[in-house]
Length: 302
Image (cartoon, rainbow, N blue to C red; front, side):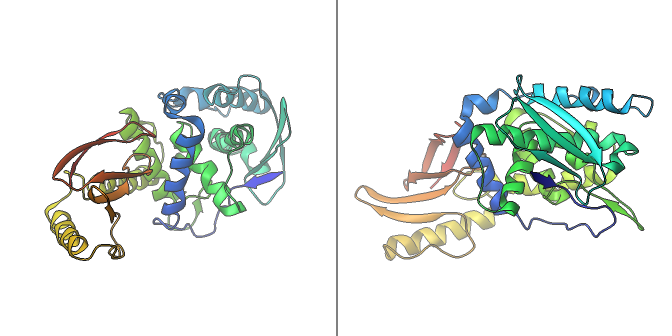
């Protein structure tokens, strides 16, 4: 049994404390599913498929949304049996060999039906990852992996939209911070040319997406990419001169790139701004590189 979520009312953590694990999760997803597999999720789960009206029958509506999430995540033979009970966490799923999986939702979703789709999206992704054999060691990192994959494959915008906060109360589902959900959504938006912002019903979710998007845009403006700003390019030139004068010296602290000596001259390695697989290219001025994992073409000034 895996249980997920958090209780309402406790303070919401903000910022990007899990960013490195999130980036590792995106890399792991591409490695396990492949570029073509990820491209199969180019369209996000539609808001209408997760909509849940207060007039809908609780169990029939929950099963309808569960089927929509299962189909979106390409699990056509996975049958979800959903129940409700009093529990500390938001939801839990029993991971077995299938084809039936048992999901339990917190009793509070009986009256907070708009967020049932968000809870189900995380739990069904647990099933997907279980079938793929993709997991991270430790509960915390594995839950971050699940949130990241849910979001990158087009169902996790629901998790961010479930974030609501005011002066007296707060609610958040999942293990990522709101800004980290926004970051992964923005990475997906850049990869698939998709704008999720019209789907948000929560103003706080939109604000978190905006902050996450700003962080994601920083990834495509890091040297040696040609889109890097003036300060970054100047720092890169300084570090390159030092590497040329001191072969084998350790990488400069606080920068994403590292220089390496090779028989054919100096090379620089840096993370792909899309999938974060490390790329190595020769240091010889303008270079066009192609990530072998996510196939992103990168213009570099090395």
